[in-house]
View (tube, rainbow, N blue to C red):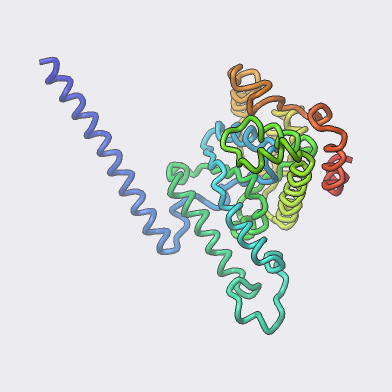
Length: 322
């Protein structure tokens, strides 16, 4: 009898699970029909998307982790849409990426030219929204906020913000010397690092330092361009400020973005992601979270490496850290 009772209970649970799945499928089909009809109202609102842009190793994982723990928030972690489209349009189409006109004889030949900008920007818009809705339909149902952490895709920042001008933007900056020091550290402790990069870090570290500094300069320059053009809600955040006064900086961010979040809710999210609450085996020397401090580059970079970074990123240091 006990086996029969257990079987009936399992059957009821399976039926309830099946019913929930059928409801979700029906909702997704209805939403898909609205998207195909061109109705964005059925999905995540573009104005409820919050981009975290800037560059890798700037604290974007920490910031977005705190944000995703706020009520009605979810995080899309590095979907690479910015990276893919950014590199496609920036590296392959150069000048046109910045709205500059083609020679008159070429204007009618190139679908990616300035005259067709709205056409391909709309394609990027649909890709982002459709991808977000497919993965985060519960956010759409609740009218919540989707935080898209895309640091390595920040080369595509002008394109992304141009395609979704209603969305909100966080421009995250960090001292480039600390960024490069963190990049070097991760090269040795993270699994799956390309063999060429690891070999370069061991045999020609100054060359890798220069390349990392140039990448950072490019990403931050393009993110800054997008930030200055963006007419929607936005916030410029320095990692050093976020580290020194996390709650105060979070309050400033959410005030600028005009998203209502209570101070107690922020404090709980911050506490959950403080370094003290991270397991001991996941922080400290030899781990991903070795320092999480500002100014550590003085110990981590040689004087020659620090000079290389300073020379390459001089415009950023002068603007943000003079």
